[in-house]
Image (cartoon, rainbow, N blue to C red; front, side, top):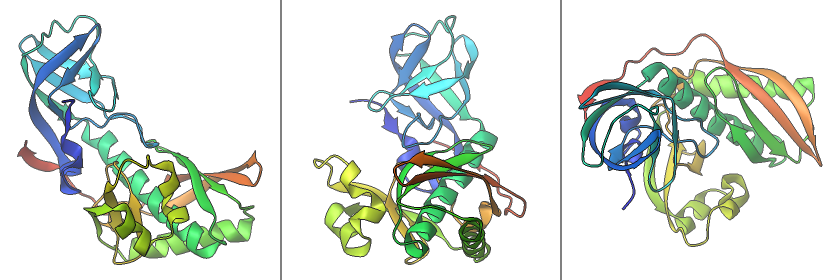
Length: 254
C-alpha cells in the first residue's frame, strides 16, 4: 500500500503542518507511516524536518526518504512499534522556504524557455537558502541574467495564483511543448499527472513538490552564481530576497 502522501492532496495541503498517522514499518532508526505530511527527498526538492510525537514522547525527524513507503529518520532510541499511533508536526519555516524556492524554480525555468531559445531545464536542486537550475543549450551573459531576473520579478510582483490539478499526458502536451515540461523523463506507464499551474498560461508542469499559492509569497529572486557544466549546459544559482508576502500555516490538522 505504501504511505499516503498528504502533501499531494492540494496546494493548500502544503500549508498544513499537523497530522495523525499509524506506524506501519520499523527499520533501525527509521519508521514508515500509513500517511504523512513530511515531504521526502525527490524531484530536486530537499526533505521536510519536524517532530513525531508517540507513546514514548517526542522525536526529532532529521531526514525523510522513500517513494512508496516513506521512511522518517527518528534516531535509534525511538522505541516505536508497528501499530503505534503518532502525531506529526512539520517545521513550517523550512517547508515554506522549500515551497517558495520550488515555485521560483518553475517560474525561472518557464521564463528561460520562453525568452532564451527554448533552453530546457535539465536539473535542479531546491534548498532553503540557495537553489540551482541547470539549463541546456544556453550560454548566459550578464545582460541575459539581468533580463531573466527582471522578467521573473515582474511576474512575482503581479502575484499570479498558483494551482494544481490532475491531467493526462495528452492534455499537458496540448498546452505545453513536451520539451518544456520534460515529459520524456517521466515513465511512459504514468498517464495521470499532478500538474502545477502558474496563472492562466504562464507555466504548467508535472510536479509532486510543495508550492506557494500565490507568487507574491516568493519575494524577489536574486541570481547569485553561474557556472558551466559542459556540453552547452549552464547552472545558475539563486536566492530569495526581501518583499515576500508573509503567510502563516494552516491551523487545522489532518
